[in-house]
Amino acid sequence: MGTLIEAHQLRKTFGEITAVDGISLTVKRGEVLGFLGPNGAGKSTTMKMITGFLEPDSGRATICGHDVQETPKLAKSKLGYVPEGAPSYSEMTTRAFLSFIAEIRGYRGAEIKQRIAAAVEKTGLEPVLDQTIETLSKGYKRRVGVAQAILHDPPVLVMDEPTDGLDPNQKHHVRELIKAMAAEKAIIISTHILEEVEAVCSRAVVINRGTIVADGTAEDLLLRIRHHGAVSIRVPAERSDAAIRLLKDAKVVAGVETLGKANGHTHIRALPRDGALEAADVAALLRAQQIPIDELYVERGRLDDVFRQITTSDDLKRKTNGKGASNA
Ligand code: ATP
Image (cartoon, rainbow, N blue to C red; front, side, top):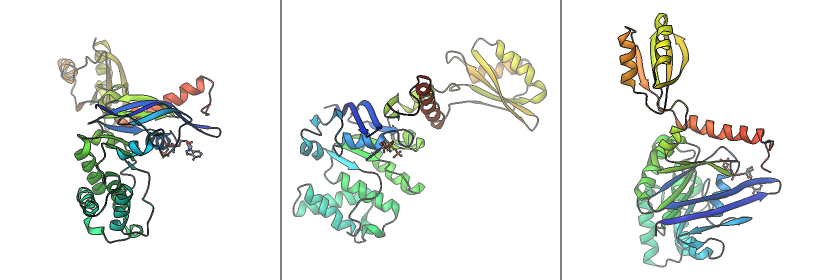
């Protein structure tokens, strides 16, 4: 089966607050979906509904075709969930906690040991197996959370901010683990860290105020930035007027911006028309007029810019629609 996770029109309100307002998505085997959004956008609430830990007001979610509300046991047998933060049962040792989860999952005897050994190997928990969870570093606590989620080797993994609060080495380790598991599973991870999307996700969904505002690969999202593919140059300040005039007249240039002046140089950005702007053409154009180029590069944009652009323009749209800051 291709599609392992399906959410259809999920909706959840808490009193006056509409946390999730009609979210639909599908995730196929082999996909790692990054779930992005500002604080309070509705990421955790959506994940809890997808994993069956929270009942939606309306809409439904299925895991491997099993409805999480109607057939929760079946759905949960196909699912590993890493909730936000550290695992509870902090007074248990790592080994005792994982044994306990294995028993809940229905394993007995030697299989418990085998399951724990496999999960411990993947998550690198060997050094802390006999330490109580409360005494572990944040990184190891997160790894215990991941280990309990993969004990039964589920085809679907849902991870709420799996690298939150980890140091760069620990982040790298968790990301490598996600990548290693990706081919066989459908994975959703929520994150605030945009570099994580480029590092591990095949696709990203951006949500804001409970609705999906963008869906695509990191590259698709970058295309939404106005200056994606723009050519930036630095030229001597005394030649900047000539350079700007030349660029403005070029057919492949949609517009020219001056980004700043420093150390006797002017930083200019030429915006592409229909994606047709080549750095080599800009260089040739300026050289033909003996305008020296101090620096030249093509701008790709950063996911941070996309994120800000999408989530703030959505806010603006809502405000101009007269809906104000509420989700009503
Ligand atoms: P963050 O990135 O900060 O974790 P999030 O995108 O995961 O945020 P949610 O935790 O899903 O967002 O919250 C969405 C909205 O619903 C927020 O306004 C939050 O305050 C509200 N909310 C979430 N859970 C509850 C609850 N149990 N009771 C009342 N309001 C809630």
